[in-house]
Amino acid sequence: MIIDLTIASLNIRLQAEEGITLSPGERFSAFVSSGTVEPDLVLKVNAGRAYVPMEAREVFTAPLVEEGDEGPVSSGKPFWSVSECDDTVYVKAHVKDPGGEPLLIIPAGKTTWHIFLDQEGEVIDPLPYPVDGLLLYYLVSSKGGIMIHASGVISGGKGWLFSGRSGRGKTTVAGIFDGCGDRVIHDDRLILLKGKDDWTMHSTPVYRNDEPRDAVISHLWIISHGGSNISVPVSGAEAAGLVLANSIQQNWDRRAAERLAAAAEDLIGSVAVSTLLFVPDSSVRDYLLLREENRMVEAAHIAADLLYDRQQVSISAGGYSMWPALRPGDKLIISAVNDNPAPSAGDVVALKRDGGFVVHRITEIKADDGGVMIRTRGDSSMKPDPPIAYEHIAGFVKRLRRGGRELAVPPRRMPFFVNAMLVRVVRFRDLLRGGLKQVHK
Image (tube, rainbow, N blue to C red; front, side, top):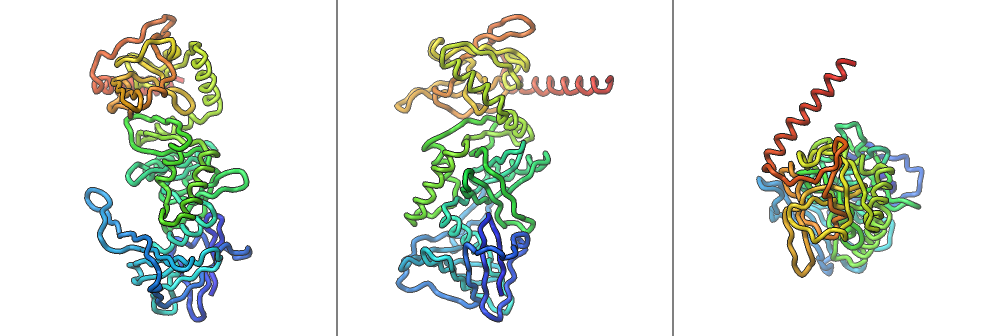
C-alpha cells in the first residue's frame, strides 16, 4: 500500500510491505496528496520490531517532558534517542498510543528511509507521535530548512512569524490575530524553507484539524509578555542567536548544525527580525500594523537620519503610556543626542523602534564594563521596559506643542499606578464621547 503526503511542499511517500494497511492519524488527513510528483522521500514501512546495532554509538537521548504545576518537568522516562553507525542514523522512539518502540533508520545521503513500527495487526499507523516530528525534522534539515517553535499569521497581507520559548505567548498571539479575522498558519510548530527569492513558513500536522497553509515571511519577532507593546529591531549575530535558540536542532550532528547555522544566517539576511514585548490583547495587532506601514517605516528612517545630522524633528504622540505629561496629539520635539548633556533619570527620550519611536522616561542608568545601560518606563505603565544600551536612544524630548503653545515636558508627579488608573478613566470618557457623536450623526 502507498500513501503520498505533501507537508511544507515536501513530498513524502509511505510505502508498506504487502498485507499491511496504512492508517495515518487524523492530523494527516488534509496533507494526503495525489502522488503525481516525484517524492522527496520514500519511507518504507514495516510492522515488525527492529533493533539498533550493538556497534552503534548513542549520541542523543531525550527524556519525556510532562506538564507539572509549575510548567514542563522531565519525567526521567525515555522518550526518544539517536544512535549513529556507518553514516546511518537510528532514531528510536517510545510511543504510548499505540504502544511500542518504533525505529526510524536514515541512511546518509539517501532518499529512501525505513521505519519498523513494533506494531501488530494488518492496520498500522506509520507516523505515531513523536515519530512524525522526528521524521520531518531530519527531512527538513537535509533540505537546508528550519523547524521552529513559533506561531505564524497573515495580517495586512504580510506573513508574520512569532517565536519564543514555551510560555512566552505564541498561542496567545495566534489567538489574538485569529480573533481579529486574520489567517493563522500555525500556533506551535512551523517549517521554514527557502524558495527562489523568499523564505516561506509552512504549517505542520500537529492537531487533528491542521491543513496545509503557508505564507512568505516578511517579519520575524522573538516574543515575550510585557507591560506595553515594544518592538526592537535586532540584526547580525544577535538575531541569528535568537532564531537558533528557538529552532529544533541536534547539536551532536556537525553537518546538521552547519546547515542550520547557514539557514539562520540566510533567513536573517532576508527577513526583518525584532524582539517584541506585547500586551495580550488586540492592541499588539494594531501596534504592529501601524509599525509595518511603508509610510511609517520611511518616515522613521528620515527622522532617524535627521537626528543623526543633529536636526530637530517633530512627531505626534499616539498613545497614553506617558499620560498625563504627554497626551495623544501632542507634537513632540525631539533633539539630537549629541546636542544634549549626558542622560539622567527623569529625562524623556525617544527610543529607536521598528517603524518609529517609543517615547518614555529614563528611570535608571547603569554603567559597567559592557557600556552604559538604561531602563525606561512610561509614566502610566505598570511595568518598566527591559534595560537597553545607551545607543538605542534616538534623541531627547524636552519640549512639546499643545493647543498652539510650546511647553516644557513636565516631570512625573504622581505614582505610576495612579496615572494608569487615570488613563482608564480618560479612555473610557473618550470612548463614551465617540459613541455619543455617532448617535447624534
